[in-house]
Image (tube, rainbow, N blue to C red; front, top):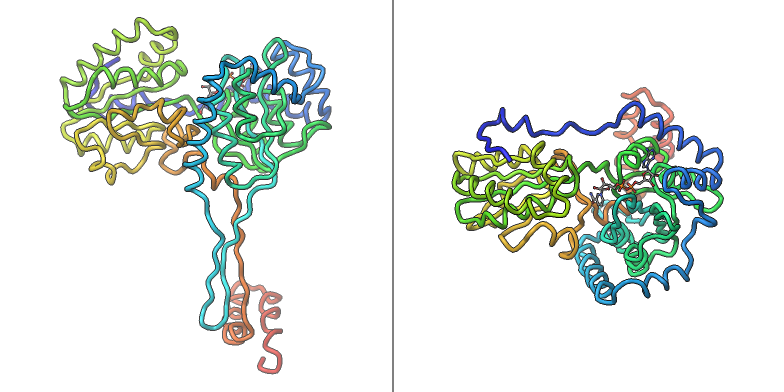
Length: 425
Ligand code: NAD
């Protein structure tokens, strides 16, 4: 990990946004076309090709769910249940109500909240199992009131889904689970096949093929975001513990060779000790190679002149995860403008949020925290505007509305409101 101290240096650790290669885009378009044209048949063939298993059916059965409960350690089942409860509690606070206001002239205006009808939650498989991603995608949709939630995830080579994924799905209340992954899963959710009915929105993280497929089908369905590799920034003053900083940086670096882990500190001593500590801890990590590549490519310790400069750097990076390890972290909160999730104090280690606190771990990456949000209940609702004009309100405003319409050259608009004036025209 390198020590840096100027904005120019900071540029060197910025990642370019992943748009995929031309070849990857072409592969994804071909898969989507295949799914659109051949439906289930394409799903079976593509699953055989990419996941190396020829399935006899796509839908997970009740029996498979029961078996998952038998396979998984009961202590882990209890942990999943408790995490689900925490996530439910947090997202309940995000719920919105419809509202109506009545003005003096009798006009009623409002906003009606309606949950989406059907949502697809993609849960990555491939190289690892992600029961936490099941909870993070499904529970906010449930809290929003979505009736139909469909979960898809690529099967393992024996044709099953990991027990943790199935238990988490059942605990969060999903009834429809399909063994299909990659771009073909996104195609099935967007267009529908004989077995999988189409949905209105697709959420959830995945690899580059999943991300490119979501980008392709956007417009036919809604999508949550295009998440890139994980990132963490730790903002620390001289009171912080370098061993904690180092282990939290590594917790994100181990995700992906393109993950980024940055310390921004006002203390040269903390920066130097963190770097030493980080290399010590790195040596014994099972995912050492990935973490090392991430730290080498996109890791840094930035030493700022003072806390104001440090905060500027944090806001410029707009990280997915920000940890604040300073003497009085809450005092800095009003100055932090851009971060997906903010962890305050030395006990709020980032993995707390990945699994258990209840906040969502699907977060904006690559600086998009400047304009976007963690996955939340609003992602699963729609707002309809409500207008009800009284006779009185129409009569006193029709001429103004008609004049506005004629200014835009839209006579039929003007005539529509003037018609309500009757003899007063
Ligand atoms: P995945 O489920 O995203 O992808 C596996 C699928 O990719 C396969 O089923 C296959 O269909 C497809 N695929 C693989 N190689 C292909 C090829 N050459 N051509 C066409 N399709 C191909 O699982 P993954 O690959 O392990 O990736 C998971 C990603 O999700 C990782 O980047 C991980 O960091 C990320 N993730 C993010 C979060 C988060 O909250 N941000 C959580 C969990 C995982």
